[in-house]
Length: 345
Length: 257
Image (cartoon, rainbow over all chains, first blue to last red; front, side, top):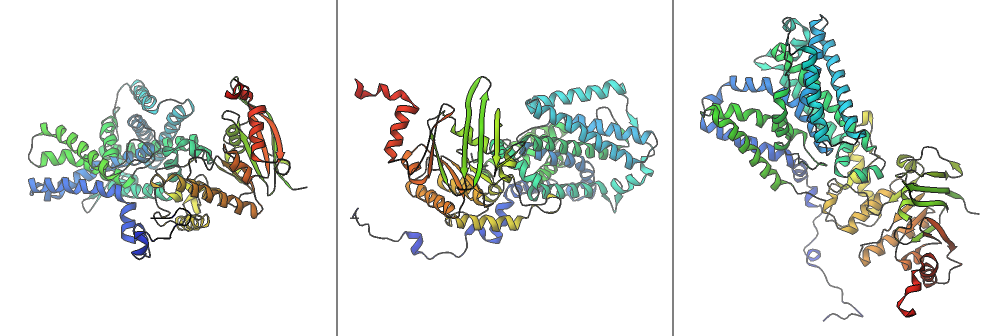
């Protein structure tokens, strides 16, 4: 019996077991794992998916042509997916990026068509994209609108504007492949499409910006708890607008690259990216509620989404199966992430 | 006379037609602990949020070391050496301890890149300094994994990082265990011993009486009593005042029937 007036000291079990000099979570390997847990899960999904495809049809999946075709179109998705991870982390959503992409690419096409150097066109496109991002962001943040609905509206409005102004006519850029910009950004070297290298560099820089930069950290805290961030002196509205401007920058780059791949700008340019890019972000392991996310995971998510279609057909199934497997993989990876991450409130 | 650190002159705040504060005068000297008491809705938290720069006063003036400061906001408040531990603790629970400690003033160098190693080192030092030496968590632990007392520790660690001149503690002991409360009190005495000032807000008058040098009682947006420890006989006297003067609901106590 323990005496209340004079409690006897006793040793707890963990004190008698001999103290471990360092905390388990501080061991280098474990620390590396914990810091990268989210995107490693996504990588697991990708590897499993590819393994199934390769087993199903080893011949098709060992030819480089298949990968080269995916690597040509993937960059456009990467330029869109990565900034969208920022937006979702800030607990917002942007559905206007397809129109922003089309709009910026349109400006690029106009500048090139007018005979100026494509580099100038790229700068003009980036300025346009960021300006549109600023417009959309200000609308959402300062008019205090729901980003889901406001950006959906902006997507329709901007696309409508393009259609009205161009009378739905496309622009062919026949001389583009002779320019330096094309050679640097979009040609092939030893069978490797150069745009994938640029896109990977973009993902890398954005991942650093996300984890190791003031802007990235502020996006995290604003998405996690805007009230706390405000109380600690973070300019919450400014950070949100910045995230939308960043999205505009990504959309502009995506527009430029997609135009350089096709040598043609279409009034519908960007439309097809809305749902795949949204799926990529969430398949990549960024949860919907904001505060956390993974840029590298988003990149792998884009890879998964763009491989599903090629993979299903390549594995010998007819095109009718594509949609089903698209959905199946999205659902399976969401379940996987659910298990992999806990939500703290 | 002690050096005057912060002075609020005739601070009023209204939310639309609701007056939360109607002309508050309050000052804090260097090295003193001011206990701010008042019922729920008295305007304590509003006053604190104005001091912390989160809310803008409708009218009135804020002086730091005798100088009026224009465009008062959260960043200015922290620059002036005021750190606040908010009632809700103002933590981002999905982020690491390091991120929370440096929220709003990240240590960044060239082009805004974070000085990650330095932040972690400082976080480790701060956690040790306030006596949260538990080996269950590391600076990279997610705040959502911590207990209430540990979260309070993170909020306090953040407040002492910059050697602030004035630390505001808004109900820091609410929902804390006995030992955790003891830790907070120990911390307050340490801060006071180092010559810094504190505004302590609490519902537990005994706690406030134990710790404060001067008491300010708020009621419905006005200061109704300002007295020093020396002038007050006991905590009961304060409680008595609160019941009779500040909130005369005591007229209807059961004993009257």
